[in-house]
Length: 128
Image (cartoon, one colour):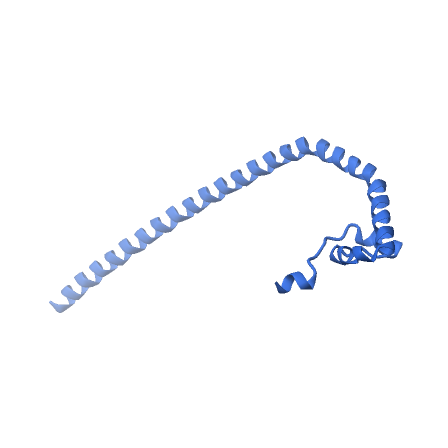
């Protein structure tokens, strides 16, 4: 009689394990389908944003080209102004702190290089 009871408990445990495995398989399949849907949704969104950004870029490009051409036309004027400021700094020592603050050099080759460099605050301003 103990053999019969052991077979019944073994078969009920086996059935329970099969049921648990089936539930796990269904849950895994459901999660996989959800992941695939999420991936397609994200890919669609990114593709949509790429198209939208491309259209924006195409719309802005003519304006940017005009601005660059205007900047290139103004470059000789800016360089001449920087040369005049540099010359003024050489002849007026009171202007030296301003020249130092904006890193304007008194030699002409360095002034052309520093013209496009960003201005930094002098060390005395950082201590305050």
